[in-house]
Length: 285
Ligand code: SF4
Image 1 (tube, rainbow, N blue to C red):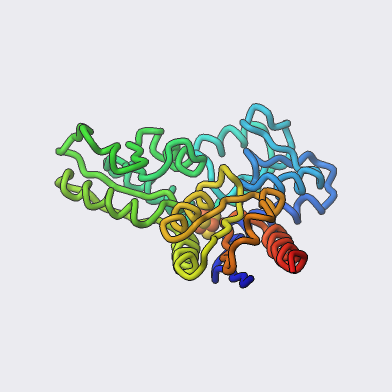
Image 2 (cartoon, rainbow, N blue to C red):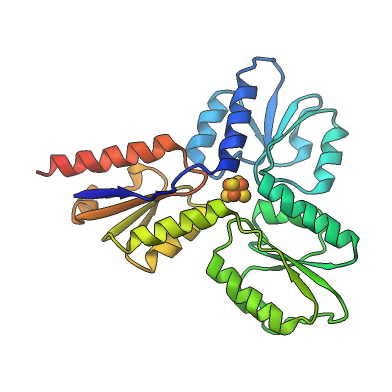
């Protein structure tokens, strides 16, 4: 069996930065409670490891203790959340990915100039919810091309479009083309993150050369799900969270296996999976 790992797989720059900053804070032993607003990343196993080190997860600002430390994860938050946190006298550790901060700034500036904001992305995703909070939650959010059917537009307005960093580039392109036809005055800011493009492209290339692709990452991780979608166009694809989700007999029926992982998948989970497959292959000989 031949196992190939995609050129770009696992933690991206923004996630690694947030994880490192949280780890450092957890080991300062200050005795102060440390929260992340929402799970630090979309990876259950990594979050559990951080919880064992003392990290608490708050689903909302109300759950945060006064005077504690609060880590804002790489997805970022709405502008109003900073004010809410400051009113609780907490120490804010802002681990918003710089690429997400850039989108928030574009939205804030364009909205202040009177433009209407369009966000292309998943309305349920924390990054999109956060970005919308930089234009008083007034953005039109478009998840897929079909959302544009029968949509009414105020054509006297100027529109500014931003994109969720983990959006699939092909999906965005088709939405951009349609919006271009529909709106007389629109500025497009393609804010898809290069880490996302690199992972999608590397996974796509690898999926053309193997019989089976294993995509490792949280089942709720948007960027991991998109990697699985890209790979499934070319070969049989399995989306797993850890090696325990693999069916040994099934994987051993393939002679070339490609491995990729979402931007929130830790290196140790990738390594464990590769070792597990290698062992399974050796044991069947
Ligand atoms: S995928 Fe890109 S934007 Fe999102 S956290 Fe990673 S580096 Fe930042």
